[in-house]
Image (cartoon, rainbow, N blue to C red; front, side):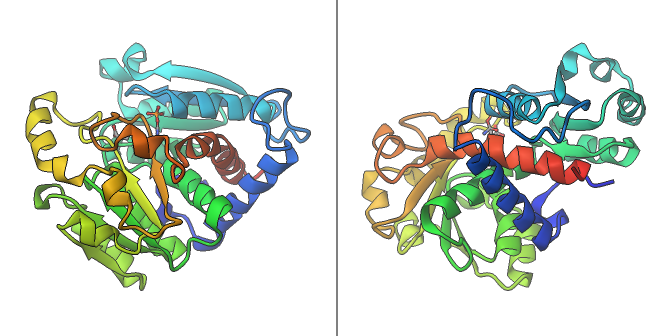
Amino acid sequence: MTHFLDIHKTGKAELRGIIDAALRMKQARGNRTKGAADDELPLAGRMVALIFEKPSTRTRVSFDVGVRQMGGQTMVLSGADMQLGHGETIADTARVLSRYVDLIMIRTFDESVLEEMAQYASVPVINGLTDRSHPCQIMADVMTYEEHRGPIKGRKVVWCGDGNNVCTSFLHAAAQFGFDFTFTGPVQLDPEMEFVGLARNAGVSVTIERDPVRAVEGADLVLADTWVSMHDAQSARERRHNMLRPYQVNEALMTHAKPDALFMHCLPAHRGEEVTSEVMDGPQSVIFDEAENRLHAQKAIMRYCLGV
Ligand code: CP
Ligand code: NVA
């Protein structure tokens, strides 16, 4: 069973194959995201379940559109409306769904839900975000960087803010794609040391730098994400904002990165908080290319999982 659960759990050659396939499929459509289905319909006759236990705009729409472009059909399910949200076990849900659908994408809270789903499903399972990681996003981000600037290998990538789920998947990707990674943020929100170690063991440099100006010096790519993630308690909002305010990505901070550095954000963004509108809408920002590439990257991930 070929699941797509995390970037460090998929081989380097396979990850590169996914990026190449995504670029090929994007080109084959003449770079158009909308309009007719693809010429090739590798998902014809296939049904994909998209399960959401948290809100989503990009993941939901890009998976749904991607499946349809490849000739398949989708079923978008909210966790709360399923028996899953009312006490049925994940293992039973996985076995039942496997009798109806060919592929399961799930966005959930605890990573153990994804793992149990993958363990008991007899169809591939894709991680559409957990509290701990967001691998589909980072595949789109690597693709986006390389479209604009060439190979990401050896580049300096700087994460500003909370060492959250998206940051974790970047650490996984640093290990697999061979780029250097700097985290700048408050000590309370450091990324998980297990994954810092994973990247370092893979031979890439991982730096923790409390001073955001020093951190972004010489950066090829600067990243930000929301200061309060979907799994964070709203009661912690003010405390998190106070801790994270020095790490806002603004024009002044961007002047310390390389002149041709890119800015990325997985979105949704909170303008004026983790990033200013000047940076979001400025010449270095590629945020909407990132969002578009979710579509292309995930189409390639689904083909990889299904072997089609
Ligand atoms: N970036 C991302 O996953 O966005 P959604 O939460 O809208 O799916
Ligand atoms: N860190 C954010 C990412 C949203 C796509 C969250 O988990 O809410």
